[in-house]
Structures are given as C-alpha cells and as structure tokens.
Length: 270
Figure 1 (cartoon, rainbow, N blue to C red):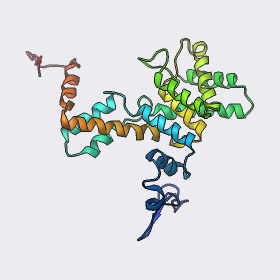
Figure 2 (cartoon, rainbow, N blue to C red):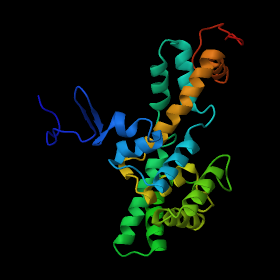
Figure 3 (cartoon, rainbow, N blue to C red):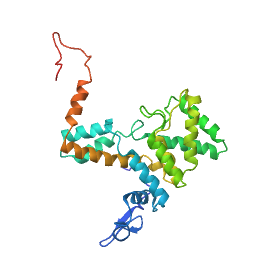
Figure 4 (cartoon, one colour):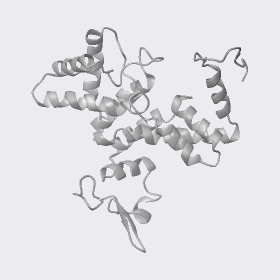
C-alpha cells in the first residue's frame, strides 16, 4: 500500500560506479578528500554548492559555539545509556540527540522560523519595528515563548551570541536577519514586560540565514555540533564513567509521595 506522495524518485546528493564516487557532482576521492574541510563538506552536502570563505567561517563558528554545553539532560541521557549498554556507542549518541526539541537544540530552528515570519511581513511592506511587534505580539497572545531569547545564566548577554555577531560583522556577512534578531531583542522589554537577551540559539539562525544557509536545515546544525560533544562525553564515560553516579544522584533528588503499605519505611540510602 502506498502512503504519502510518490512525486520524486531520484536524489541529487550522491552516486557511484566501480571506479568513482560523486558527491554533489564532485569526485569524492579526487576533488574533495584532503582538499576541503569537513565544514566545507557539510555546506556542500546540504546546499549542493561549495561555500565561500565567509559562509565556511560562519558555519564553522556556529558548530564550535554549540558543540559542548556541559551536563545538560541530553548529555546525561547519553552517558547513562552508555553506562547501561557499553557496547552501544551509537545508541548512546542517539539517546542524546533524540530529545532535540523546543527547549534543547531545537530552538535555533524555531528562532529561524520567527525571523523568517518577520522577514515575510517586511517583504509585504511592513516596517521592521512594526513587523517585529506583530510577530512577538502574536507569540505572546498564543502563550508561546520567544525562541532564541533569555538564558538562565547569561542574563545580560550570551558571550557566544556576541562573538557570532562580531564574526558576521568582521567578514561582512551580517544582513537583514541579524538586524531582525537585534530588533526583536530591543522590542522584547516593552512587549514582554522584561528584557531578554538574545542567546546562542537566536544568534545561530540569524548569522546562518544571512550567510545563505537553508532555513529548513537549521536544526541540523546544533544536531551535528552536539554529536561531536556527545562523542567526547562518551569517550570520557568509557575512561572514567559517571553514568551511574548521575543515575544515583537523580534518584536521590526525587522524593516518593505515592501510597505506601502500613509500616513501610523507605530506605534513606538506596
């Protein structure tokens, strides 16, 4: 039984024969391996074109900025998975990526959608500030968080976001999306009732979209970057594991408030 569209029956990414492997129309062995960087290869794979030096530097900077984030839930899930299944490195990496959503890793994509919606209003004739006010107002009315703004630790300025904007300005790659991102930040205090500084998840889509990176592939950037960070954590987990320590600490932090049998006393040191 056929399910879904059956329109496309081809791919434009790679093909091979007995002697040659082509990636986006380029000979992998003779043109790409040892010639381009992995960051350049990512851009080529995603867009079909080799990046300019400015595009490569922007993508590289975003990957470095988001690769490591400490013992966040995705890292803890990954390390505890490897502790329980030490033979399944790939499963542990997957465990750390599967939670990519609106709170962790996925907010860059959501911020990019917000910027694109604002850009569409501007293209339709709205002024920048009016377009920002309209979209932020709509998000607030729908009780949606403003993606890419606010951070529990970096309340005044996320240093990673600041650096990405500096790089974009240095190489002349800052454009309408960086302008939109800053306009949203300026408008938030009046529209939300308190200031919220732009964070790394707001800066990443701004600089990438200005560099010509496809909006539909935005979520892939933090996924790709965080995969590298997870591999580092999983190597460390094999050398000096803390997965079971994390599991025990989690259990110890949670109280039981359900029903108990008469005379039952919980073990205080399970």
